[in-house]
Length: 510
Image 1 (cartoon, rainbow, N blue to C red):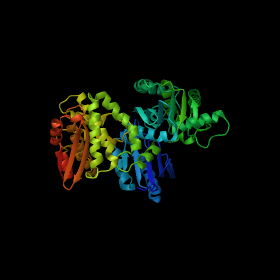
Image 2 (cartoon, rainbow, N blue to C red; image 1 turned 90 degrees about the vertical axis):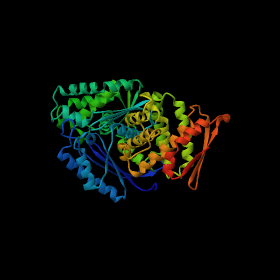
Image 3 (cartoon, rainbow, N blue to C red; image 1 turned 180 degrees about the horizontal axis):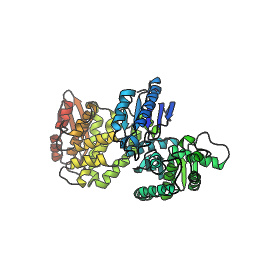
Image 4 (cartoon, one colour; image 1 turned 120 degrees about the vertical axis):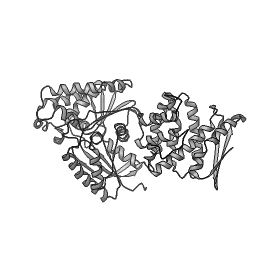
């Protein structure tokens, strides 16, 4: 894909839909077009268990309009849906109708994936100070990320959103006197386990994104007086200034009064109190002193993620930010991480020399690296069938920095590092498309041989060379200080059948 080919990123949020059309640039991207529609997809449905018929129709109208904008720029659309859709029992109705009636294919993402994309967007807009808390308050959920630069240390998605809490605590135009404190107590209780984990990292700065945060930043700016900034990105304010703004909102007992608050967008007045209470409570409970507003969030992260994708796998720039997730999981659960690291090294040597023979892209290298490092985490449960345990641990682990699709592929490659080869009777494997099936088989084939080459668990095979000539692949192992390789070569040969199946070649290991 040319760097000048436009891409459209569509964020289907609980409150608003956001579209960005952009092209790649040295600084990330250049915006061609933007569009926003306040759809209120999660409005009026209690605890957002279903999408109302009216909300679905509003959503389809907005999608059709945005798809027309993207098509006008010849930009393919990548669309993701968040809390309102992922929680709705009738989500499939909306997703299926969207594809049929507007041509937009919607990817419903998890809260962890949502947080990853938010972090990716935020770090392009704001320099993240050492150990900061990123807070993004949406309509249905709030995403919390403790980050150091591009590294995610902690990720959590909590079901505390501006629309969700408005439905529950502020359903009418008049605020009941007891409602704000009831809402605050509920938020504090819901956040307690998460706050305890956040405090372990001691962040002192919060980077805040989303409409709620921008609305509060604008209120703070108006209260300060003086000329207003044209763009609020990197706008700094304090916890005390936030509290003062929330108090102004809370003292406005009717929707009509809130709409008159200086600096507050009148279209957000009906849900601002709930969102403001969430932000204030997170900041207070996590003992945050200073806040920085980021104009970039999920939609920009989605755009950056899409622009960096030359294949289904994240680019190396994003992979570097993900490796800490792999290392963290491996260090917690792998009883012999030194062995896993050496296996990964051998597997990558094979990959680099056989990538063309396997008919895979260089971008898939990181899949193999991650799967090799995590292949033995299942030993934390038991040795018997530990490859199956590895699959389930990887698939269900918090893996900040990774797309959900990548996690599934990594988990499957790790699952096939031993015992049976991928089969059509294995449901997760069957669910993959043909390209992904080939990727899993090819990566698992290399991993199996690399594991065999370190069967002695002492890294005595230091180097491997591999080449394909005709219908034969030759692999040569070089020993450390002339060590005996009989066990290692035997084990590698026993595991070479999958590579033979994938390539249609005979494999000779010497």
